[in-house]
Image (tube, rainbow, N blue to C red; front, side, top):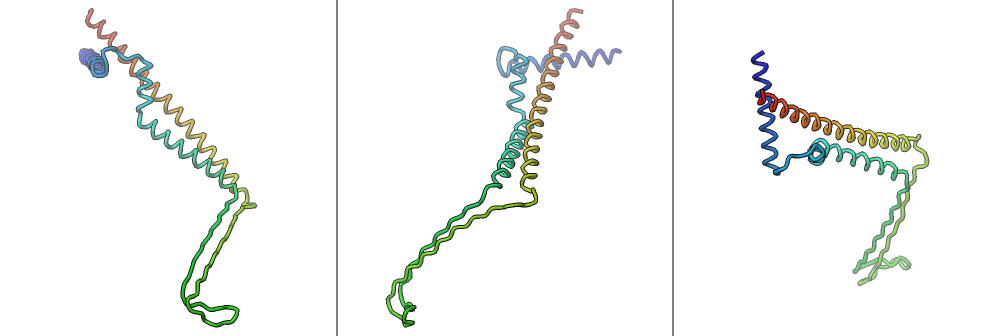
Length: 167
């Protein structure tokens, strides 16, 4: 019983010192629960990583939707040659000839049917994006609950410290 009392008193003292050191290191006023939760949500590394994963999944979804659109490519090439050349009308070589060559091309690709693979990819990417959004919200809720539980535990320990001091 004595060891249990000593450990709970030491926990109370440690919690009180932690709260007081946090108050002096950040500001003179104690933080409210809302401030603690907002700080945790803003600076939590896991939340930031999940936000990045959510953006990646959103980009994958948008890319899979854009893959339904046709591709259109246009190319152009021009070249000029000086020197000896073959005159194609007389088949004789001419000296100091200037030859201008222009090549152009336009290409378009359209997938008419791919066994509904593209539509299923769009659905899959949309579900992955929605899942990552839900995971982000779950992570935020878990962090908020953990901060609230720690905050309430510190307040409870401060109350226990006051009761112990009065006794």
